[in-house]
Every structure is written in C-alpha cells, then in structure tokens.
Length: 355
Image 1 (spheres, rainbow, N blue to C red):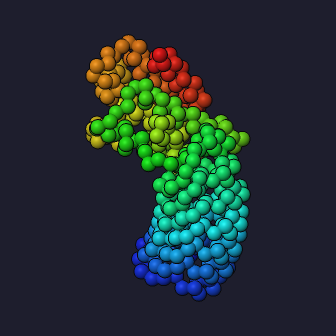
Image 2 (image 1 turned 90 degrees about the horizontal axis):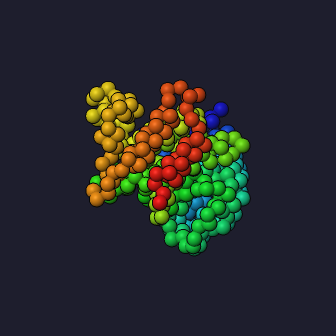
Image 3 (image 1 turned 180 degrees about the horizontal axis):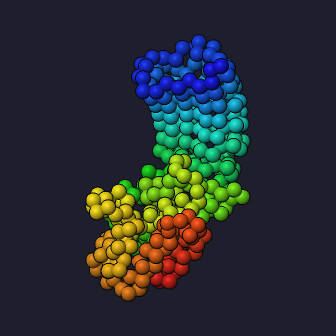
C-alpha cells in the first residue's frame, strides 16, 4: 500500500499530469519540491483524499490554487511557496480544519486574504509574504490564538496592527520587517547598538521566550534561539522568530539564550575562528577572561567614544555576564528559568541604565 511519494534532487523539468489524481487515495505524504515542475497544479489533486502533507514548493508552478484542494480534509501541511502562482487564495482552503502549517509565500498571489482564515483553529504557522495581497490587515488573523508564526511581509497591507494580536505579546514572531538583528545590527560595521539598546533587545527577547515557557498550560519550546532569529521592528522592538529544530527542552532554550547574550555583549560568534583555534567555546573564553578586565572581552562599540565608561556601567556588564553564565551551566537542572532571566534583566535595566 503506497503511503509516501517523495521526489528529491532529480530535476524533472516536466508538468504534473492531471492523471496524478488517480494515484492511490492512501497516499499521506506527497512531496515533489525544487524539481523545476512547470504548468498548473492539476485539479485532480482533490482526489488524493488521504493526504496529510502536500509539498510542491520551489517549482515553477503557474496559474491559480485549484479549489479542489478544499477536498483534502485530512491535510495538516500545505507548502506551495516559491512558485509563480497567481490569483486569490480560494476560500475552500478554510475547509481544511486540520491544517497546522500553510506556506504560500514567494508567489504572486493577490486580492484579499480570506476572513475565514480565522476559523482555522489548528493553524500554527501561516506564511503569506512576499505576495501581492492588498487591503487592510484582515481582522481574522487577530483571532487566531493558536498561531505561533505569522509572515505577511512585503505585501501592500494597510492599517495598524493591534497590540494584542493573537491574544499575546508578539505570538512567537510577527514577521513584517526584514530586519534581522544579527546581520542588520550586531555584525554591521557601519551601525552599532549601545549597551542600553542591547539590554533592551535582550529583554524583549527574554519576555517573548518567557511567554512561550510559562504563558501556556503546555510549555512551548523554541529550539533555535540565536541572534539570527531575533527581528527588530521599525520601533527597534525585538521579536523572536520561531525555530523547529534541536533538542526539545526549556532548559535548552535557556542555555541558547545565555549563549546569545554572550554573543550580543562580545560581538563574537560561537563559531569564532580565533576561539576554535584555541580549543575554546564562547563560554570558556569568557570564564577564562572574566578574572581580568571585562572591558577587554566586550564589544568596544557598546560605548560611544565621547561616553565615559563608569563603574556603574562595568557593574551592569558584569551582572549581564553573570546572568549569561547562570543560563549556560553544564547541567540543565542547575540553570535558571526564563522567569528569572526576565526578572534579573529588568533589575539590571532599571538599576543601571534607566535615567
């Protein structure tokens, strides 16, 4: 009994025949991605009623999304991103009540985002940008309390976003701006964040992860905390982009957060060539250097040339390094929680930096 059909690394340069719908209705996973497939999505795809996952991303598919997709009631994942699809999203997509992940980004879709999306109670990840959608930000997306990741970037959507979108601070990531913290700020030579700005970014990120760990009946683990997954909006507020790989553990998130805090303070990547050549990781290097002057290990751009480095500033930096070390203790049970991280960062911010 055929359950899975996956084709990879075999550029087919072909079209999907309409007869593809005659394949067994027992197929659960249909995956033909990055294979230079041309033409339309066959309407007969609706006959494959056993599908739980349909992946056709990274091809050259054209035309519209066929309404027959609405017949795939068991579908949990639908990936059509990075094609050349046009037209509106058919409202029958809202009939896919089991849908958890929907990837439509990187096409030429237009028109309105269906209001009935708000009925997709199982949906966790929704990628809609870039496309050519227009109109005001749809109210339906505000009601999706289970949504973990929402990407509507690079569209012509108008109107302000409510502060309580999804029912929480920043879901996991509301991706509106292509403004990655690591590449656009932390490692850029022509722009720098001062100490106060970096503390604020790390506090925003800590609050988002604290919500994941402690704001739900069942804790949500991020799995991939790093500066590349922190985005800054146009008001320089940090948001945490969702990760889905790695060891699933809240204490693992805390460890990753501690490493990220070290990286932000020192402007050194964990894979820094100099550290690797000395058989050191970022944590060991900081511990080794901690007995000397802290100012020798932190990024020189934390302070402008005209700003005098005070004892208060040095105590602030020492407090943040100690916090990072407490996050990255060797055994998971000895690490602090994200609640502790937020509490301590708030204290650091209020005591040393707020005027």
